[in-house]
Length: 171
Image (cartoon, rainbow, N blue to C red; front, side, top):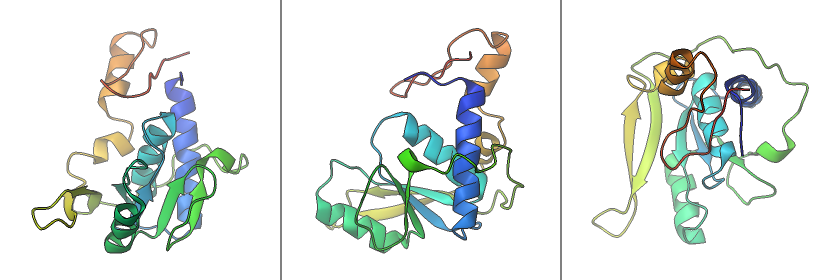
């Protein structure tokens, strides 16, 4: 799937506004369960733009592990595709309200706030959540990230992507 930077930004902004509508504020955890597809990149940026911290959930993991991560993280919202069972509200990225604003939301977080919580396998057999602050992630939420830099270097004509990520191409 190809997205221009403008399409990616507009979609992520709509996600951010939807999350703000769900009450997401700085340090709120928002789970993402969509697999490796364009919606993952959109969701992560949308969460950061809303001020939340993303919690990736592996859709191929056993249901018990997925449920544990959702409960333990205290996710306020789950971003998904289609209907999903969760102990919190689910925002379906495939049915996002087209009337949501595509403009950048006002920033609400700082470098001291959470950016993400990643669950490792854990030496005890139970997953452990590892937290990271916005120190490194904040530039992405503000549009100052490597893909934007690549687009600037190529004059917006070259594809911009990271290894293992969906292709993002300026159009």
